[in-house]
Image (cartoon, rainbow, N blue to C red; front, side, top):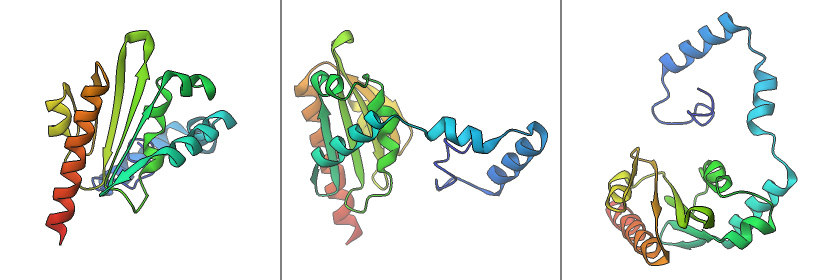
Length: 167
């Protein structure tokens, strides 16, 4: 519950969420401090990888994106699943509404796409690119950089429309 609700920060977190958490803690006697350590402890290589992503994100009109190559994964000694596991680390950055990681997966000859949003609905865009998910968290798998760039373009347009409608 804690990780799926992003530390109880999602808009759909309710009193029921806390009641369920309370019941689970009371009945299971789980060591939640140890659980947090297991959930959030990361090797230094992942922290360096997070810094790489932060320093290399392209940001335009509230849309942040990055293409992570197989060579970069090897440089930081992380696998193709790592970026999607880290994408929620970027939830609370003022400068963007939508952020998207496109990770090269050479083994499967594709790009793994993870998308998150704090405004524009993105699952409809992901579904147009053979993906899906929730309104603000979704993904897809694309075959090549042309498909990645097409997705990036659509997400960028969604951010621009979102910004225009806020005014």
